Amino acid sequence: MTRTALVTGAARGIGAATVDRLVADGYRVMALDSCEGPPKATSDDLDAVMARHGDRVLGRVVDVRDRVGLAGAVADAVREWGHLDVAVAAAGVVHGGEALWETPDPVLQDLWDVVARGVWNTAAAAVPAMLAGPDPSRCRFVAVASAAGTHGLFHLAAYGAAKHAVVGMVKGLAADLVGTGVTASAVSPGSTDTEMLRRTANLYDVPVEELARRQLIRRVIDPSEVAAAIAFCASPAGGVVNGTVLHADGGFEG
Picture 1: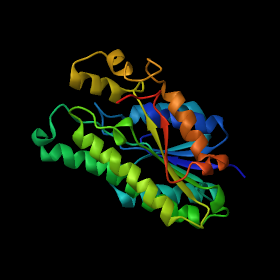
Picture 2 (picture 1 turned 90 degrees about the vertical axis):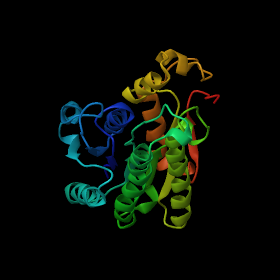
Picture 3 (picture 1 turned 120 degrees about the vertical axis):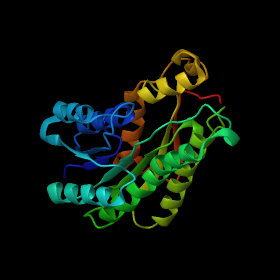
Picture 4 (picture 1 turned 30 degrees about the vertical axis):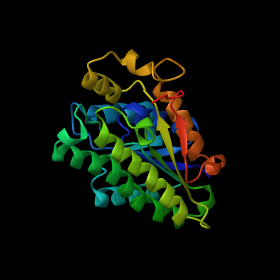
């Protein structure tokens, strides 16, 4: 039986690389993105992902803040393919550049809504479909966390708080899923070659390479490398990574 997946934040960056990797591994993928436009991804970005893969990828413009929209996308995937095996919550935004006490409330709210509640909403929409499917023991929920979900980073307190929440969610979700066969985990990237990394570097007014020096591999990570880690967690064999975080961060030193 062909495995199927839903990926949020799929129009570019780690999300797009994850779609590419899952398709290469034989999946059919429902690719979702809000496509809000610069500095976020656009509908053209999502169209490009779909164009690379033909009928193996279906695309939908869905915001992870919209649980009804997510539920509709899950229903579409099940209607099209008969089941849903994997959900990857990769949608995210980054804000920062101020100390915690200087961070505006709208910034904190946006990070919480997209980064934290976005993962919550994706799980709430996707997990029931996995439990109702033909073989829950092969089903996986994978969230993209961050090195900021483990470390405290300068002038990124709000972003770090949201990513810490993501880690807490997958741990709690895994506990809720005990005995069902479905597993939940997070993959925590380090400095990865994405638009979000470039925006982070701009917050600090440093080159991207400066951020990469905080990793033991002393280079920027390619999105495909993070996607490979996500693909393992999403695989039937990846059930051993459950209720925990796989650190795909190149040895992030904090």
